[in-house]
Amino acid sequence: MAPWIATCICSSVVLGLFWLDRDRDMRTSGSLWLPVVWLFLCCSRSVSQWLGLGQPISTDSPTEGNPVDRLVYFSLILVGLVVLARRRRAAEIVRANVPIVLSFLYCAASILWSDYPDIAFKRWVKALGDFVMVLVVISDRDRLGAIKRLLTRTGFLVIPFSILLIKYYPDLGRGYSRWEGTAFYNGVATTKNALGMACLLFGLSALWRIFGEIQTRPRPIRRRPAIAQWIMFIMVVWLFWIVNSMTSLWCLIMGGTLLVATSFRPVAKRLAVVHSLVAAVILIPFSTLFAGVGTDLAHGATGRNISTLTDRTEVWAASLRLAGNSFFGTGFESFWLGPRLETMWSLFWWRPNEAHNGYLEVFLNLGWMGIAMLVIIIVTGYQTVIAAVRRSAPESNFMLASFAVAIVYNFTEAAFFRMMTPVWVVFLLAITIVPRRDIDQSHRTGILDNTNPLATRHGQSQLF
Image (tube, rainbow, N blue to C red):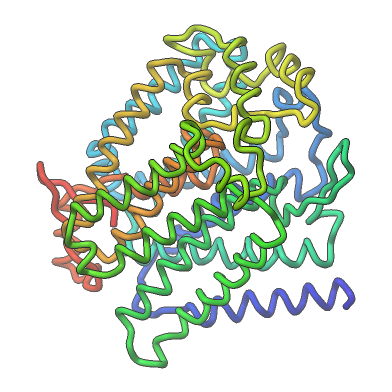
């Protein structure tokens, strides 16, 4: 089939998915397209790379940047701030999320001791853009609809067009190992792991939508969104089959199991069972990866070298030898720059640009202070998620699965406090708190008549 014909067919499929998923009951604002564009760029590549203006990979390229990308990101953030400035509820949401705000402020302060303060500042601005886009979504007049449309719209663009590029535009959708010459598939992303991360995110959201549509919309004519999500999930499964991104695949399996289990009220109403399920999802991979429990079984299931985690343990040891101040770190997103990056690339032929462990990555960049901030965010975030489960919020199963997946994903990949990382963006969506009176006011105006009021202690409520 000619590529242009495949492109027309793929575009028709995407339009059909949007048509199937349309819902007139959702009354989201037009500004929701801002976070959709932002998340699409997070899941794919920068604008300069799409336009063919990207630079060859070198140890200097991280410090160069691109004026086109800076213009696009700054414009998106600026418009997002304008949107938030016109929403009174946005300021209340910020005040309700002190741990998240303090963590971003500490990241900003760490720029002062970075070896590359100008680069660290630019990266912090993009990281702040993640939170700005999260605020645009959760301050929308229809929060539930905004979350659904954010994930659905982005997924309908990322997943089908990844298949198109892999099958019919190999120069864009495939890559080859520098030394082994073997092919890998990246789709609209830049690496197979990045595509795997996108498949994890949109596979999990598709499962959430499928169960939600089945449970709340029994009439056949209202099941069209479920059909669209089934098509999405099937495409995600196919991509996982060829991409071979084991971290994302197993995170989807474990997160999906947790999501499905907590979709049933008898399970979700027993908090002891919910806690046990979350503990199992986190402790089983932790024990396998770091305590040597069931390594032979895991090796057979994944085909990976569990003892070295595919050379990750060597990267961890080498990066710790180059670590800066243990209390404050090297500065926000500053470890993998300059001489340290040159040293790491001289040691490893595959040129790592992250620690492949989110907790170690936080330590290298932000020190023990950053680890303390992360622990606070995780603890308070889990309280937020469990409060939603306790109130039987219709989105609590997705919140819980997203939270657990983020914890596990960072065992072998780095996503915490990383700019424009989809797992981090969705993690922020899951743990961000919304003031109770804002939700109560929305119910009085009838805007959120299809959601449940979510009240928490101290007069606050969760995002969902």
